[in-house]
Length: 465
Image 1: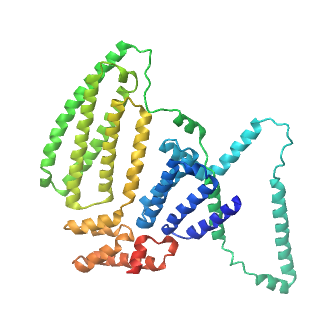
Image 2: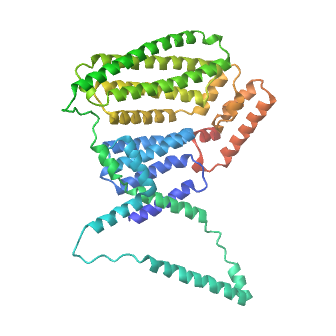
Image 3: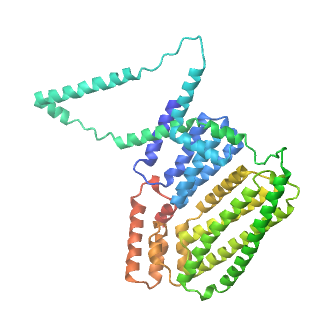
């Protein structure tokens, strides 16, 4: 029964993906994946966390159908690894689930067989050993007769023209070897993840590691006192320095309107690089200072106050860079790089908040890693809900006086209709007009030539129009 399920799913995999681009097929494949894993792991599927990740996986598949972008493909694969990994061990951290899920998809079958061999070798038994499969015998049984048949067909064809003509009439075109190969790949993938595996060292280490630091009973108070003095000195100077820098940033933000596009771009990118370096140094410095027993030292209140102050000042710095990026977008429109800056700034604020929680609640580095990876995946999923190509195009064409049409044409065909409407209602250069028309023609060609497996929601809506 299990083999019938795997073979059927492999054929469905080939029907969905053989010579097809991504689209509706990905959304349907998420349902097949959940069905396969439910069939082989019914008890584990009853876990609430696993059901939650199954829901996220289905959502990511739907988002591929809706937006059909590289970001949606990446999110869907990440959600798949997370879902498979949650069946391996539901209580693991998200990054361990990814590791277990990815390992299951790539080499689950071979890992399971390897573990079975280890168990058999380690257990002594008086029972008669089971008969193993003679692979060499099966190779001989297939290869030798097949070789002889081919050899004699060639010989008989040379010896008899009628036999040769008869053989020539045999047509094997009805067998699509690429389809079979795709089905075999699907069978291998589904066999791999049908019974998800655990990378035991990483899984057990993660399960046995808490989010809190443990107090060391054998503490040198004098050493802690010196470390506190050093920390206060460092953070005191850095707070004063950052306050001075923030004053200059406020002055710079106040005169953004007087800058040229080139100056604004240079200053914005410079601010981002400064922010990256300063935030990384800030977090590393804090983590080093509060790595151990200093968290439990009764005279660390001043050091903690300076730490909170520095984190808050860095948050203000992030906000100022956000304002500069907003102004830049307002003047020159959205691009993926400018959207990426907003995402990075959001992640930076998340990192600063988790650093405050780490210091305040005496957490360890594992807490930082777990919290930040969870939030990063949520942000990734939220970002995938937006069709960025159409959003960028709509915003730039609506609010920007001289939009960069060359950049907008370089985006995916999902914005072709928007550009076509703009071309019909505005006067633009012949070069841009021809590029938009060519893009729209390519969109129409894909719309009517793509198979149902690779269509997205936009394709169905446009075709209905």
